[in-house]
Length: 199
Image (cartoon, rainbow, N blue to C red; front, side, top):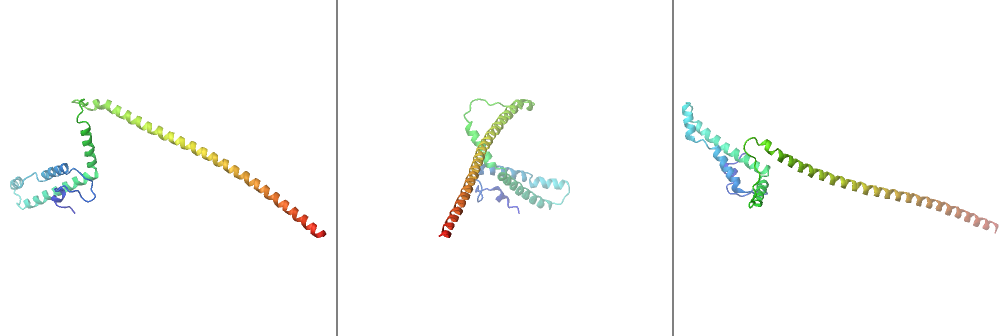
């Protein structure tokens, strides 16, 4: 449900719980202008407009309610936009840029009057060129990183296959050794058995 106009205006400048600190001066200045827009038509002007049309003066009461609700809706929409569009961060960025260049003496380029699009084409090309170079550099860095990972993976895979071959060779040697031991053990057992049988 919509709150009152006073609630929407945040007149006390106090941020809601968990809200990002903002510029109450700028925020409330916009709120005041929105309220002025909503209530810009005076009751007297509206009353004269009704009389010229022979309307019932009870419409004045409804007009007051409309203005009040319009003011509430405008303020609520502005406050929502302030938060959802992250205007706090954007305004802080603008203030930082303003502070950074406040002592700049070199006149920055500005488009002349007339058709602006042809004038900014060169700037667009420069910007897109910088953007292309930036992303080309990122792609190159990612490709280099990927190739390095491939090399590392190939080395590790080769090492793994070497370990597997060594394990198989060791298993073969162990198997042959076990067979040799088993054969020798059987021969010794037979020799001992024959010796006891003769005695």
